[in-house]
Length: 96
Image 1 (spheres, rainbow, N blue to C red):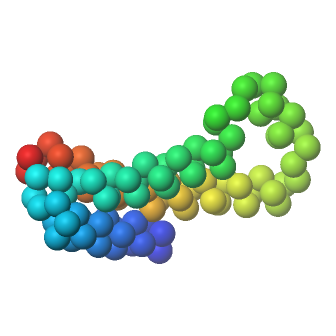
Image 2 (spheres, one colour):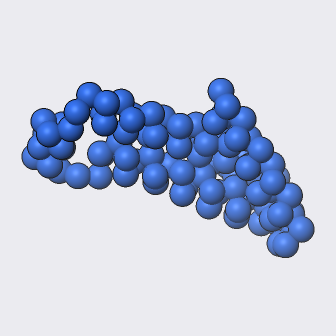
Image 3 (tube, helix red, strand yellow):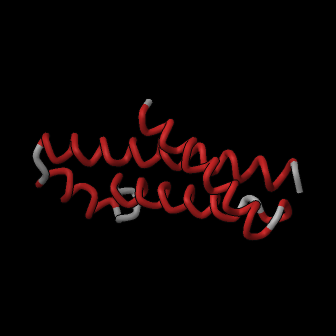
């Protein structure tokens, strides 16, 4: 829950900075960038950006603790990125 709140706080700060810099028309820029950044980090750490052979090799050679740590980073970064993307989509589709 803490990481989701961090994502919400980052999205609010991002919207406020975007409003100051670009105005209401482009208030989605910074939260969208933050959201795509953290979702990209989540995709990289999840291992979804490699081929099946590489994924199988990584799965066979990593320990249970490493897998748990990788899954934790994936989930936490997704929890930070999702509120930012929701806020960016809201500002893009409903207020533009």
